[in-house]
Amino acid sequence: TITSAAKGATVPLGGYRDPRPMVYSGLYPLDGSDYPLLRDALDESRRLIGGLQPTTLDEQGVIGAVEYLIAQHVGQNGLEIDFTHDLGELRLPSIVEATVFRIVQEALHNVLRHADTRRAAVTILRRDAEIILTIRDWGCGFSTEDRNHRRYGLRGMQERSRLLNGTIRIESAPGLGTLIEVSLPTDSTRRTR
Image 1 (cartoon, rainbow, N blue to C red):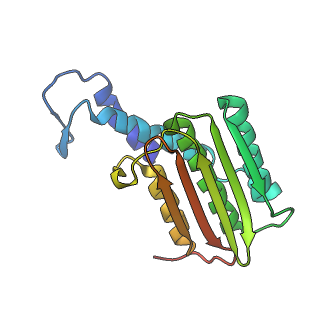
Image 2 (cartoon, rainbow, N blue to C red; image 1 turned 180 degrees about the vertical axis):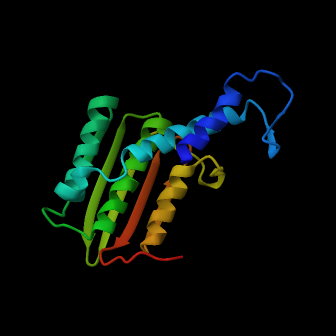
């Protein structure tokens, strides 16, 4: 599995202190700077595997699942999250509900891990045949020109949106927080490429 591979890759690096590059399996040189990236990949894979399809999403729909997720972040991590929606009891196609949930989950994870703030807002609105999802934080922000290769979460959100023929807009600047706005068609059918 991906978790096992990432865990196995971190083992030689954990005790490695020699300043010279080491060759792992003869593929490429690794040094101590690779350890945090591998640790992050391992943590991320565990987190995603642990929440593959929450039963709350199946039983209560996307609103119930997002409310549960927010309650977890508030209770366990001390975040203050405002949540508004206009869906009522409306159920969306399961692929749309799963995509909305996963994007909210990743965005809140990013707030907790990177934003240096405890305040965020999540909004889910239905507009004609679209769902508009907005996640906002008032944290440290980042330069959108400097999206480095370690921002897997943002790339994952973009890919999830693209697969459902949706769009995503990410606005951020240092010191100004981050705004993520996703638009997904409610009649989404998954792209094959």
